[in-house]
Length: 187
Image (cartoon, rainbow, N blue to C red):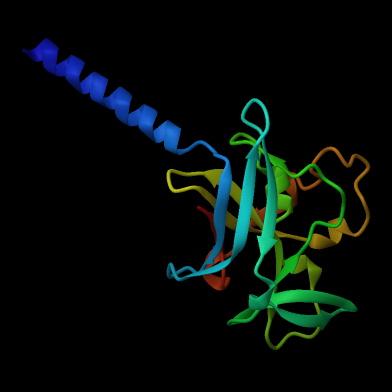
């Protein structure tokens, strides 16, 4: 009986873990894009369509709901910003890139979801206040946590346009409690 119970528990754990792994995979289709406050309130800002390629790779297309964003002219640049306790301005990645993603490598997607925060009482845009959402696959979808990034590094094109230029050492941990929208989810 004891041996039977051990086998049963082992089998159930395999089923549960394989179900969890299956739900953590990327999949084709249209998903919603949300920015989340620390208290869990969220704002749907658009959607993203994933199209399967080969070997776990997906092409993606992001469509933001520009009606939610207000136009600001900051530091000689027009920006689309969300208004709240601070401005949260979308910064499009300025160079050609393949817009591909896999569960193991989400760097191009992370490059396409750049933001900059601006204190309401601050003058102009401070590109060192960049936000880089480091993404991971979860059971609910994709989740990004805000990291600090100096966006000035994107002022000139990288030498190699086929490799994402923002690397691990370019981003720092952000003080999530001080940021209005420290989380991003795709589900």
